[in-house]
Image (cartoon, rainbow, N blue to C red):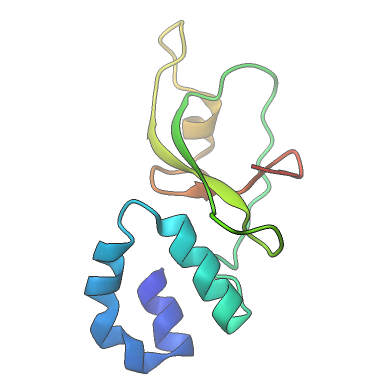
Amino acid sequence: IIEAYYAMHNKEKLSELDDLLQRFESKREVLVSALEEKYGLPVFPDSYDVEFGPGPLGLIIEGAAVPGKREGPVKSVVRVQRFTKLPDGSTGPAEASKKILPGYFISKVNDQSM
């Protein structure tokens, strides 16, 4: 996704992409926020509305605030690490929806920023 973003907005930076991704390996949300601020366009232009009923979703997530961000489209996000089975051993609704995958970022739940 980041490669496609640079290909569209700043092709000259593509040669530096591997180094950039390595430097931001554990803090991709900071990179996403910086790119959106610099170029004024969302890195993840697609958003999906997914509705689930009450109860566990069957997700293992990792959260991180975006340092210094008080305004703008991304304040903090969680990254889906993996799925987990529900207590009864069944597949969780997030995995079953096939709309959420490991590696995806979630920035809002019920219209509330993370």
